[in-house]
Amino acid sequence: MALSKNKLKMELLKNECGTGVIPDGIYCYDDRVCPYLDYDDSREDQDNGYCWYMNKGDWDIGLGLLWDSCKECGVKTDWKEDDEK
Figure 1 (cartoon, rainbow, N blue to C red):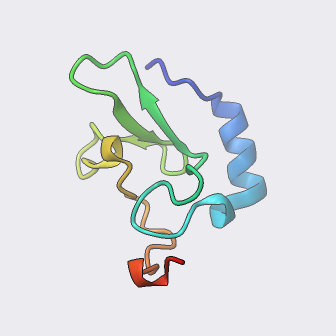
Figure 2: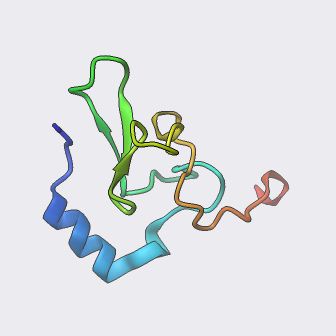
């Protein structure tokens, strides 16, 4: 797997920041991109999303939308579009 982020760096981020760095909403980005979101450019079918927080890619069973930056972790998903300013 040719993921661009360093696994040790992600483990340190996970231990230090936990879910505090994950953006609000249903996507892995808001005004900023979730630092846990990455892509596996080595896969031929598409740029598949990979979540370092969950240690899973969208090619895993039950995780199909990370490539579209749809949040699969379920963290901070209670944000509503009406809340956007």
